[in-house]
Length: 428
Image 1 (tube, rainbow, N blue to C red):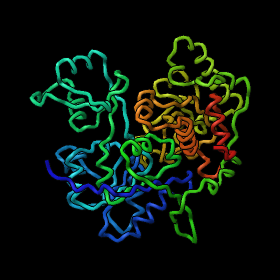
Image 2: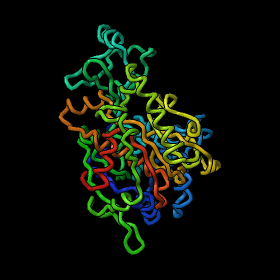
Image 3: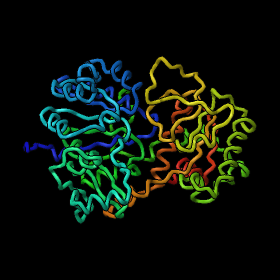
Image 4: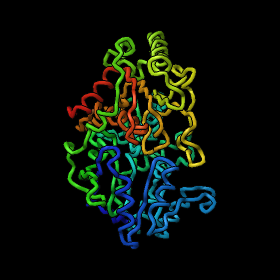
């Protein structure tokens, strides 16, 4: 085992600033002003944002991994570029492959990490009960008191549990409630950077915050402000966010008949959609959605933006608002005026929907129960309301509101609607 020189005292700065305050602009300015001797890795959710970084950071040559230089794999080229000390811009998806070799390369090279939006650091791993019993009875795995899974049988080289084996050997797999495996992104990766900046909003309710608390990774909060033509990081203060600007632009549908479908606290949750007992209510929600778009607002498809859980999309889509786009591979060859109406609810860090003025957020956001239990059982309290509000706000900001234009929005879940109203009134 190679002895690690992990920069364990590395500070993480959460640039927790309201949408439109200039977080990405600050990052671009920061990279332009930093001497070239310092190297950066910039991680963004979408391919389209990669070009923005390449074009706007002018004092250094950002490169993107190319599979033809990595034996057919982008990740192999990514590691090669780190070894060469290049400035690199990649997607969240590629960064998620981080392994021991990447960790060592980061330790040997001085990099600053800038991550646009929070990263998927926690994930439930599919597990059947008989699989767990088989792994335990065959002494293939062991479970420590804190739930950490260890792989015991080193002689097994190939197994249908190969993914579980890799995660267990890396020490990143945990058992929750004796029924589910939870994977955590290897925390040492974050500790190997000279400095880490996370560009987001409402970090206090994000899974990455609870993950940092679990691993005792220290972080500080800052906010972005434009002063005398230059972006600066200042102490975080919610009173200076200017939410009144959003309140002036957002018109929330208050039609009692349309909103009655979501009166219960858990209405429109994922389990609500999946329950056979609610099939008639789901049909009613579809009718309400059609009514809102076609009669209440008389919206054209090019103005419509809506969302629900991906697995429930087909239950709600209708004439005039069913189209979508593979936003993960979106690039500048696609025009913004294309009539794409549906997006995932956790959409962030893209401006391709900035022409949309009539919105519908048809879901009630809760945490994955197993992920919630994992943190709470370890003494880390979670705030599901902040997580739900964060997703709602980020999704709304993909629309024309980012251009300072008014929008209309239908939020049939009373819980989600009240969270937005309280935020607009500075009560959250």
